[in-house]
Image (tube, rainbow, N blue to C red):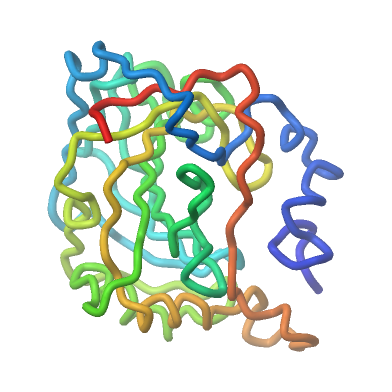
Length: 268
């Protein structure tokens, strides 16, 4: 039985608002980043974005039924500066992709999609006592979005994640991560990004995210993405009924920016 939300024709993004009213809100994500309307904000340069991710903090990887997700021990992690007024801790990271490499990212840039988008999800640990509490407040979460584009070479650090995916092919399966995964290697060498106020891109679509979308992509191989696309959205013992049980794509298309302001740090 398919979940009440997902990425198929019957339970995909266009249907979410029927059961999750927030999905029809005015602060929803993702959006198309129209570089003609972004505003350069010098205060973002004056308060450089800083992140700290230690070694051996990635603990488990799980198939959520919507993709893969890595849970971390974020005690000594930090994200601060830029558009953030407080300090944020890393909670987890996950990825969205498409059935082919000219689609898959949730945010787009001037209408152009990338092959995938990695999300590093943080919560405001100065104002709130838990991730769950933070997720219900307008300044509770901060998500770094990283675009993935296809190259002939594999991404070395991402290949460590890929080696675990055969163990979590089906929904609900998990695996321990008993090696060091250097999260810093998922981030491009850049201080350029766009930022705006948005939401989670999956139900219940809480409007609690300060988005930080990095301008420069990282390179991954088509083979790595194909292994993402082999994941299933059903449990191992569930009866497979159609081709819809394969997670060939798991992204939400862009939504209207409305009257929100897109700010940028660093020029194109």
